[in-house]
Length: 168
View 1 (tube, one colour):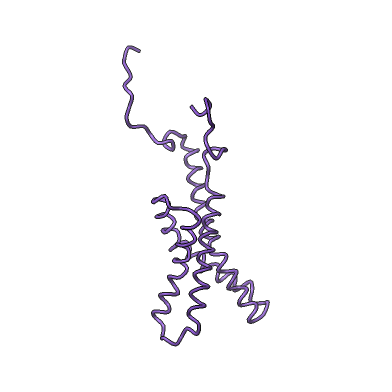
View 2: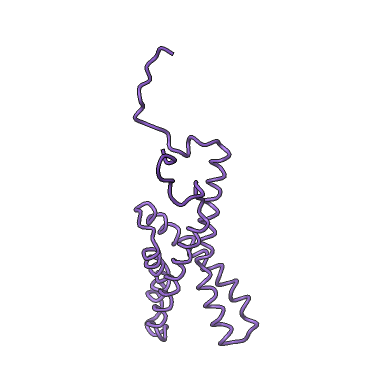
């Protein structure tokens, strides 16, 4: 009672002040949002590949092509897109435009490696391939961004804090 309280310069972050269950549920929700977004980022490429296989061959190829391409595209988005999104988030540059541009870069990376390793005449139309992989990567980056924003946990039901005396 008689002691004078000195204001502390160091305060615990909000996450440390929450109860253990609330903190664990928040981490689980963020984990779910990240990995579901990475899986969703591979869907445009998988759908495009499945439609291409269906048009060039037959309708029987749609489901196997979609599942196979979806596995590879989602793994690709998880292994290469997730670190990119982490860097963008840390630099506070995680916006739709940057997500699209880096998604195009992530989409072009395997094609660039394969064209570098293959013989020069192997790829028939490289400009079309680079354009399509870049566009699908950009769309995948946008899908990742919007899925993550939709699923990421918000600590408040309001997008911004209240104004006036209720904010204090």
